[in-house]
Image (tube, rainbow, N blue to C red; front, top):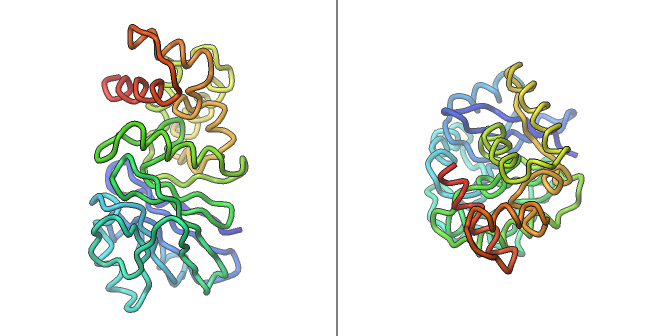
Length: 257
C-alpha cells in the first residue's frame, strides 16, 4: 500500500504525494502550485513517476506546467471530459492509470457534479477524490447537477470501508459544523469533531479519511438516515421523497450555511 502525504498549498488546498517507503518513485496528485510540491520531493529525495489530475480548476492544476517541466516526459493522467493543458493520457471510467515504477494501478471513476468531467481514481487502498468528496462533506455543484453529484457520491460510498480518501481541501471543521446542524443526535459525529479540532489545534491535517468514517458521519452520504431526512424536510419546508431530493436540499443549505 502506498503512503499518501498531504502537502499544504495555496490557502486551504492539499497536493498529494503518494510514495512507497522503500522506493524513490512517487506520484503527484493535483499540483495546484509548484513550489510546495517541488520542495517536498527534494526534501524526501523522491522522483515522480506520474502526475494524476482529478479536474480542471486552477487550484488543482495551477502548478502542473512548472512541475512537469522539471521532469520531462513524465506522464500526466487526467479527465478525458475536461480540457487540461499538459495532460498526456486522458482517462474516463473503465480505464486506469498504471504507474509501473510503483507497481500501482488506479482505476478511474467518472464523478461529475463539482465539474462536468471530474474523475476520481481508486487503487492501492486509496481514493483520490479531488473536490467530489471531502472529510465530512462534499464539493459544491458548479458545472453538474445535484442528481449527478449524488450519483457520484454513491459510487464512492460503495468503495471498501477501509479505503483512505485523499481530498483536495482542508474543510473538515466547517463540514462537521454543518453536519452537526443536520444530525445533532449523531454521537460518532460529535467524537469526530473533537478529534478534528484537536488535529487542527496542533496544525495537523484531518485527512486522509476512511470511507467507513464518512458513512457514519457525512450527511451527504447519509441521505437515507431518518434524522438527516427529517432535517432536510424541515429546512425545505415540505416533504422529500428520494435520497437525491434530500441531497439537493442539503447541498443548497450548506451553500448558505
